[in-house]
Image 1 (spheres, one colour):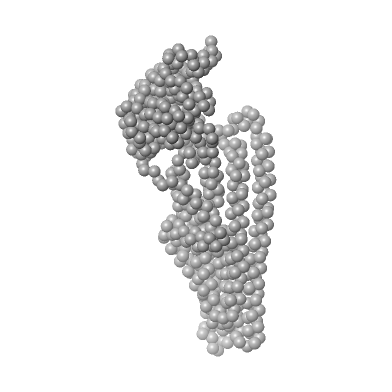
Image 2: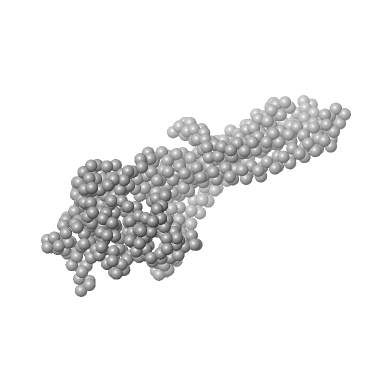
Amino acid sequence: MRLRRLATTPRLLAAAAREVRLADRAGTAVASVYQLVGAVAALGVVAAGKLTFDALLTPDTAALGLTPALLLLALATALTGSVGPLQTQQHRVLGERVAQRVWDRLLDTTARADLVTYESTGFATALERVQQHAVTRPFTVTTSLLGLTGSLLGVVAMSAVLVTVEPLLVPLLLAAGVPAVLLSRWASRTEFAFAHRLTALFRRREYLRQLLTRRPYAAEVRAFDAAPALRGRHEELNVEVNAALRVQVRRRQVIAVLSTLGVAAALTAALLAIVQLVRSGRIGLADAGAAAIAVRLLSGQLGRLFGAVGGLLESAPFLADLERFVASGPEPAPKGRRHRLADRVALRSVSFAYPGQDRPAVDDVDIEVRAGEVVALVGENGSGKTTLAKIVAGLYDPDSGVRVWDGEAVPAPDVRASVTVVFQDFVRYQLSVRDNITISDAGADPAAAADAARRAGVPLDLDTVLGRDLDEGVDISGGQWQRVALARALYRDTPLVVLDEPTAALDPRAEHELFTDVRATLGGRAALLISHRFSSTRLADRIYVLADGRVVECGTHDELMASAGQYAELYRLQSAAYR
């Protein structure tokens, strides 16, 4: 296992380097030039220092006078100092471009995931871990890779200088690299283990923060005076985080101290060696001065080199986590082709169970929706209505049985392209009314958007921005939001519309207006309606009654009332409240 990790790390680092280059080729080239200039400037400091020592100690044989040598030293030092800020700002831009590229890959993966996978706990935890840690690593990888390049150039240049003075000084300094790299690998493993262990805890804490800060929860939190209890739970999680963080920080501090001691020991040994070489007469004072400058600069370059290697090694496990997550996504599904509905959509002997669940949510179900029909699904909570609707809409594929469209099995992308769904918990986009309606259409049709808004009874100008989360919109009622969601379904113009509790937020008058002429509102499209309000479902052409994931009754309202089964019982219970 350890050998495999050692072999995998170079591949991950090579992949990281490729990500940086592909994210911004020009920016990478500019950053590389800065690294080269920095290395040359450092070499210039050593050369100018040697000329200055020569001018001071042996003015008769010096190549330059003291004043020109000092000016050259000042210029090289200034150039060395100015490169750092330029590099920092360039790395900032490049890091952002790399982060954008990584986010693009992450978003592509989440978009490809089918709904069952996306709703699973394992996928959600892996996504959260990647978002919290892997996505924040590109800047570290960017600066580390570029720092590694510049440091290598500096190390080579300074080593060349020292070899001309005394070759034995180079291995003394390079020896510090062995423990530094080993310590970096230890640090990377501990950091990834720490992040992996605390991901679930961070998710719970973030959820509590949303409950305490987001507008959708504000009213209920205050109505129940729940803030103190939620704050208490939040504080408990903070205590857990702080305890784990203290342990990890102490571990990293130990690693940092050991690394620093190794570099300091190597620097001390090299400087002592220079003193001994001068005493023994092997090198002169000018060479010793230049060697001391080179040793100091080489020590700094080695420190940056080891730091860059450490940053890359620390990022490698997180990059591997990102690669695993991206690889876990399915291949991109082909774009769905919209079908006409000439006859009917049908499910035949369909069963479906959620991952990790023994009992199927839908069990051996047969239903059909004919062209132009309004078909209703009713049943108590947990009977499988919404799950069944998602199978009809192509969001879930059945575990067994078939879904057919006009007598033929069609791919799920085609089904999704041919069906529009309005969920009970529909998304309230913080966008304009027009954008809410045309969200599925990159090239919106203004006339069609206005017509859909009119038929759904949206009482707002299409340019009105909705929601207050972005500090520029307006609040509207739940019923108005539901009309906007219905307009979104009408605009998409598919032959089948699935309506999950479409009148839950409508007042009785609005509900009556919608269902008095529901077929005209839908424009002749077929509809699968899920509702607990029997005043809505009684107008359906056919009603399916579900219990424990199975269809237990089917018929029109009058037929089901005459059979005196479960539907009739539920209908009488509901209607009794109005008598």
